Length: 224
Length: 298
Image (cartoon, chains in turn brown, green):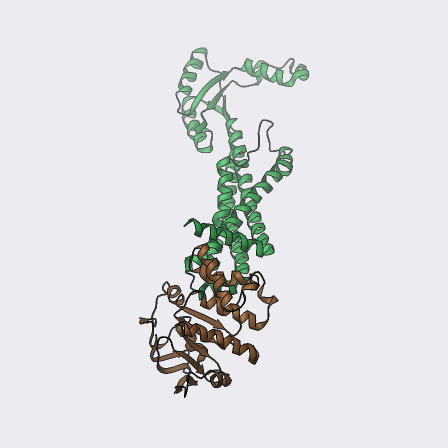
């Protein structure tokens, strides 16, 4: 599903955010991406949803080479990928319903289809009773659940999450993790960037470790 | 398709409702810019119109050195009539001139008692066709005229005409330069105001791009919003212009020394009004487009 071959990303100068990275993630896998701050986790994720282009190397998503993808094709790539951020990236002036519907509307889906799917997605994250609330009226955990519903409502092949539990306490984090596991169980490939080791202890999965842009570890879980 | 159009219009209207202050600022800016350009246009058009009226009253009067014989009068009249651009020729004898002068003096006509009839020279008055009522036309007529009769003096308001022509030329030049400048300034201000509104909504633009919206999908509601704001700005400027025309411009200009009594000030024609409103729409769309280029990146 995700293949990287000798991928390097430089932002000018000699220092590289990602160096000579080669890895493969198969369809339906759940993978943690760990490493200290500045290790290159966010850069790697940004390259996967084509917010950045690699300086060198090839990236294949679902067998499509996106290393030199044309900007007019980027939206179609992103429709296959759901992204969840640490700061949620919700529209504060819109209701919960509108925030989730936004993803479907942006893809030009029909109105009746939108309302059905949005309700379904919000039900899956347990927020179907908060449709008309604004994000700021909700807790951090609930806001992250809206963001997850927005990422999942489009049935993505891949779910990328960049420190999704960075602003949340332990209990809420585990609730969020359950949502990722459910998505994964339905066949979505999940790549979750985190430096929270307790997640791996509680939900052991394959772990990719980055350090100064290099892949220094690729551990399979002892038991799943 | 209809679903999409409906969605775009709703999005544009909702955006405007969500940011009422920025939206009003854009509309007002456009209205002021358009009204300024249109006011200047009106001033130029009216002065040109006034100039045209004045030139209609232009005639050439040729005062003769010697009073011609009766035969020569008919001959000269015929020859002068044949000059291209001359519409009619009237001979004013010394007698006629004196009569006119007396009439002009009215009650003071008694002043002329005892004055010889030969005091005033005989003259030919030439009415010109519209195309020749300008400096160049008059010059060609005069050139031909001087070949036919011996002229003592010529009157056609030459210095005045020359100055007025220069004035109108200058006014046109200033009109083009200032009009262009105002339009450019309007575009600049509008695009910057829209940039502000986009800056306030950069999160929305970022998220749209993240969830897979195409460039077109992101841009259309903003362009539509620019068009709606431009339309409202155009209508507002037209309203403002109409009110100021009725209550300020026409009153103050009508009392101005330049205005002949029969002169009605011109307002924008229906076509020009439509162009003004459409310019608002174009301004709004162009302003949005130029700002979107900076803010929307996929």
